[in-house]
Amino acid sequence: MAYSCSLIPKQVDVISKPVERKIAQPILPREIDLKEPFWFVVSELNVDDFLERVKKEEGRIVFVAMSIPDYELMAYNMQELKRYINELKEVVVYYRKVTTNEE
Amino acid sequence: MSKVLLGVIAVLISICGFLYWQNSSLASLNQAFELRDQEQKLTIETLQTDFEQQTKGLLDLQSKNQEIQLEMNRYLDIFKRHELSKLAAAKPGLIEKRVNNGTKQVFDSIEQDSRIIDSLDNGLQLQSNP
Image (cartoon, rainbow over all chains, first blue to last red; front, top):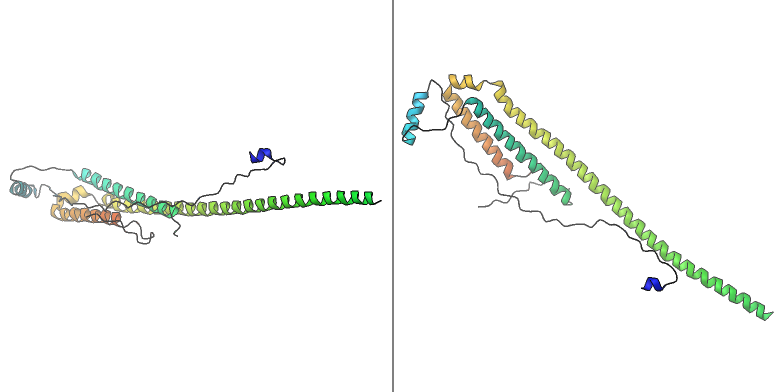
């Protein structure tokens, strides 16, 4: 209203200015706690000993078997998970750096 | 004569008044422009700093990812260099030890990786839950 009453037109400037945001850094999840399985390596040389051992420990012959190529696949999968965790961790570090003013 | 003089004085006063008003209005406009200029410079500086920080961060991220990939390849090369099937068939006891040690090492390294975010991040430790 004040502007419309004035005889001299006034210009309103709109200025964009970045606002410093405070981003709260979340608490990261607790570390991984892995339990190690025991691998039996069985060939023709020790298959009888192995079966006897399983029977003694489990009370009967029952086990989960894996071939060597499948074991290699499992090892590859573990490395793939490790790679993903580490790369994601670096992304977290990146975001922490760009959202805080620390060098 | 005096009327003419008075008229001239009146005109001069009017002109002076107009010039004074114009001057003060231009001064305030100039002040506003200076402020805007200052704000814009600050904005550009902030944007440039942010851009540099992000570019550096992305480059660091890229080189870290390459290192991680190389480490993975180094580990998997072990399987390529040795024929595990043959070795396991010939010496199951020896391979059993190596396989279990290898599993322990990999699991330990994964646990360690999840414990510390990064050495560059001021040794930031993750919060351990009981």
